Image (cartoon, rainbow, N blue to C red; front, side, top):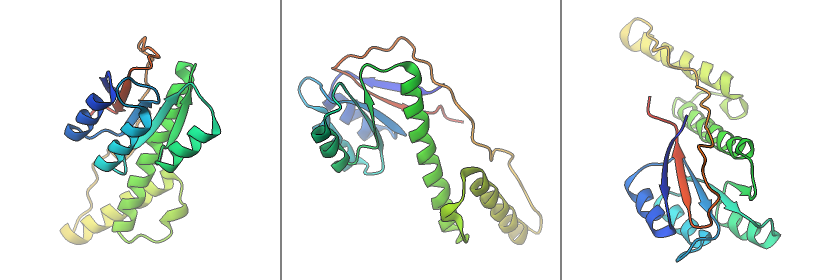
Length: 173
């Protein structure tokens, strides 16, 4: 499952983002007090790398262009099914995980990592880490935690209120 925090309005969601690190934010376009695009601007000021999926009733091109200009990572169009929501969450979290793996590969100065698939990239990083450990300690070590788990989220009876923004992240290991 996923660990989920909720906020009933934009300012509360912004305060949560200031005090916690989130992997993903589900942000409603229409909220009382502050609209989703303004919340998005402020969230990106706090953490420009934060993944945001905007939840909206509208598929209007103008909104989508403005939101993408503000670095929205994906959209969830209302009404949606739990399966559709889960697909967006999984896709964005995998995107984040792949970016983190590429950053590790870049730091390790590994060649050819930019075009690699996730599983091959994990194997390359594990191999490089084992090689580095061998050269540093004279023996190889492995932690056995290299595989990425496939967490499943449940809909949990959530509502499609216009006055909510939610953030979710996988539970700590």
